[in-house]
Length: 228
Image (cartoon, rainbow, N blue to C red):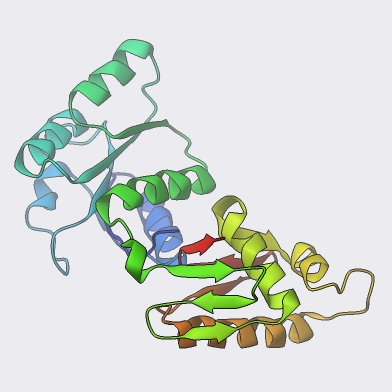
């Protein structure tokens, strides 16, 4: 999963913009918001955005014109259009004016995250030599800093996380992969085991945060891991 992207949400609905920015930040991205196209050029940020999430019905310059201008100036930038305009001709116009992905509102947060992750692989591809590699049969995690030995349950869990949708597993699924299903295992015990795996990820060279706890849900792997 690609995280740490600089994302600018261009949305004139204040509550929706703020909620989207908060959700993206909670999932490891550097997100900020702008209420209109005219604010984009003057918006303070740490460097240019890697990716824009643009509503089409903006005051002043509309989202189509903004996307067309951004695509012309920065051909490789990521552009996601999020809009209530769902007719085929409207979607075609969106792609013609620069959209990489066109999402109908209301956009489910998980779909938006998946769309950003897909674009992130193009925007910031992970060099093969810098990626973490799990050799499951050998119980080894190979990274740019070190080769780290894993226990059988850690290798099983890391492989499952790397291949899960969104690199996310629920708490009960984590317990299954740790061979703890049916046992009286509390959240604190799982957190201890996951903290040990997190430490090994960092020893191998993973950037922080490598493994996050998701409140009332489970755990998410936040770095790409190639599984052999």
